[in-house]
Length: 312
Image 1 (cartoon, rainbow, N blue to C red):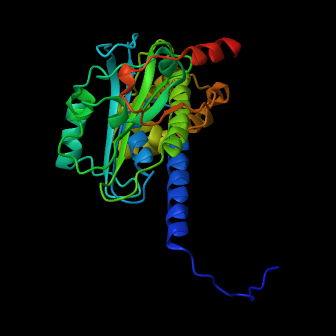
Image 2: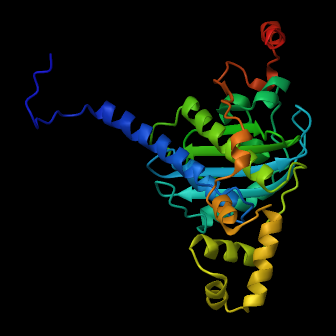
């Protein structure tokens, strides 16, 4: 029986408050990811990194890469980077990527060409999340590990997921909270990774980039699309950008072609992250690789795992 009096407040256990804050941060990250455009805007991966950085309400760092071409599970399996985004945030996804730290991380990330640790075929098929320290003893010496050299961060988590409907392409995400705060759980990171992967697949499909090669909007096309989202007419867009109406009409026509849109409403919907393609993209939880006693590079799939695969 509840003996509380009306309007009586109950003191919250500090541990419960911490859990609630983490749950809210997780929900905030998912909401931000759901707002990513279904369009290849030039800031797409940066916005994705800002969304992932919301996983912790305090200072955090997040990196997002869209890559293609990695076909083997060996350590030297190489890939091509399509786009990178970095958020070196002070909290709640507030990006300071323009800081020295953020710029340094971005430059290092753009030089990455392989993972530096082996992956099993099952990991690459289903996608996975894990701790960098659990995937390789010498992870700090890998190209991915060097991205974090000198960065004041706690345990670095990594997620790698194939992009549905785009063979050979993957979304790679690394995340770390502040060194003095509890780390995000792998399960929470995996759930956020699942949403990021679905949104990535929707963006690729909406733009017809199923060959893995992204066709980016030009800076001017992005300006025009942003203005359309703001509700401006072509005349008003021309005035805002200091261009002729004829030129603006050409940009709008190009947007219709690139986004396969038949009307202005479809352009705006895609810019706001709404696309019919999204209904055909599944939401799948990646494998969660808990820290093993030995690095994953020394593990092999067990016969039990293979048996389960066949039974499915």
